[in-house]
Length: 335
Image 1 (cartoon, rainbow, N blue to C red):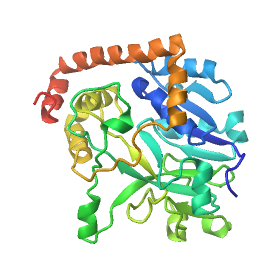
Image 2 (image 1 turned 180 degrees about the horizontal axis):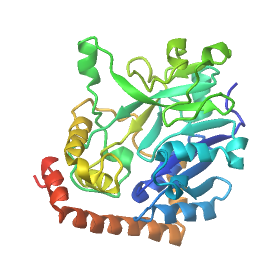
Image 3 (image 1 turned 180 degrees about the vertical axis):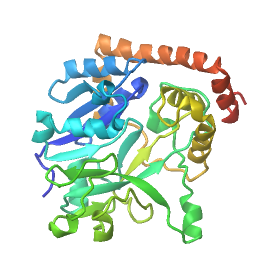
Image 4 (image 1 turned 120 degrees about the horizontal axis):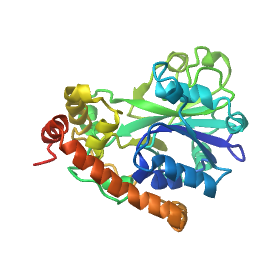
């Protein structure tokens, strides 16, 4: 029932995430992720080129493809189309475990747990694990940086202490690692499994506690952040700095250009003051070795470093627009 020598495939959808890719891949590969299948669309900051180069360097571990929705712009949703398409790949079918996540999410193993094998040693055998997603705020940062994401942002946007004092739940979204044999449509947060409890399989949270049928046999995306994060959680760096948030909005992820008010609300919600959480800071020794290996490739290093210059130029263009300047002022970029 444990992962052991079984293959784990991580699936993701990206657009314009170039500065963060090498840290993100090195981090997850050294946790025990074996394989990466990733879909991109309309990238302008070297994201696609970086992934292509990683595929050249690690062809047995990285596969990069255009998102199929680029061919059907008026049909479906980016994540759903990609997940449906993924099922046609041999590496997907060969995988024993699947994990769907995003480039701004880092799986954080805690309490002496360093790998997925050690996670299941701590929790006991299971067939699915839903990790509580903990969002982090901007840490008061205005500008982009080449420093590791997990070191830059160490304050949550959920006030867990306040919720605990008020004896209220702290509901947050999940991301799920699950056996490929689990039946049901694959979705960004979890597989939808209406009859999971009847299968005899076990679905746990990040503390190893079994989730009830009322949750597993539905499509809920959130669980209580209390009592579910002893061994693992997902650190979600949804907004990063003010500059990086402006770039995120520009690419059309959080919101679109005609929803600048919603963009401000997204920032305000994501930049709430929570509690300090440094449990997932920095790459492991093995992760740093892999990161350094990536940068030892001249072509990959050049693409990575160039991405910062490209994004600075993109930010300058954003700030020249009325909408971009208005949003930048609203979120305190010029303060």
